[in-house]
Length: 463
Image 1 (tube, rainbow, N blue to C red):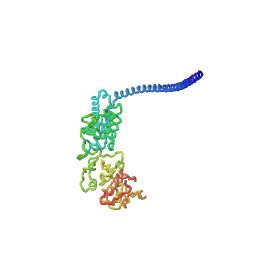
Image 2: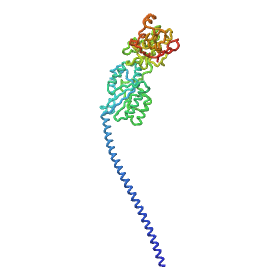
Image 3: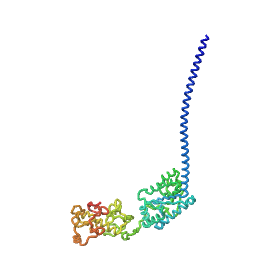
Image 4: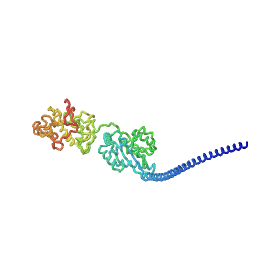
């Protein structure tokens, strides 16, 4: 009995020892795992400490750079602020007094604008105005604006050109830029300048002269969303502000005597225009005469009230290289194409220009005479009745001459004997007075449909 009790105690003891050993082994294993985890966390901590130190160093460097940039920006704002002025010249039109004063008016306009802008800045921020630079650009369709001004009797073309020259020479940063005749060409440039220059820190103010046009609404809305609209000051021209621009409630500047306060009408009463420099008055008036009546001479000349002559020739180019070329029939006969004609009807032509036009037109054969039929216009016909090279024409022998009528290659003496008088200078030579055998195309193609009662015919060589 006593032995059984001893055996049970031993078994209990062994079981307890085994359980204790198991607990010890498990504890040891967990301890080793925890040690490994601690080592891993320590490594991660060291990495994060290094990253934190690098971030702190970068933060310090960025703060130093930011302070430096802020100092530079402050220097730009304080030492050299920019006062930018963008004017839509097709809407903000300079006053008649300034335009009619020519070169002097241009310089005076620049002076008035400079004084008006700087005075405004004195009232707003007296500390920055004294060192600010005024950069002023007027964008316009120069040709269209000049036509409008001349047609409304505001100034002459020469006065307008002198005004532009005077304005541009007033300051290196003042200029009137011709954007051409494209639709909203001035708007596009001003919108882009508004978008770019308002973001520059040195731009203190942008004086915007385009309050007449609702087309700038989207650009101003964008600037408003970006918090840049506070830099915009409206430079008033017309008293009436475009409806869609009114809700921006922009500060405005009105410089008296610089711009017109009312829009010019699109119509005007016809007035006798002044011929440009170098054009004789009688030649200028002659251009307004019905060409058919003038050439044929059957009626008294009739002054046209519908055609306006506002285009000037490029003196560096011959007539047949102008763009567009002068219409031969309009100036020498009658053009039935009217507004559909792709050639120029609005040039100022001098006597020499007319001589060149006639000489070049004579180098294209008359379609009637070319068919061996009598020309109803005779000497007044704008086209040629005889080959400029006469009987010595080399193209005729090759079968390439465009003058194919029977009597179109007779000699000069034969022509005199037939007509009883020498042919005109335009018929016998080119503009320089020499028949060098070089064909010169007419200013515009000869269209026989312009001759009443004759079937259409297109002469060879025309273009």
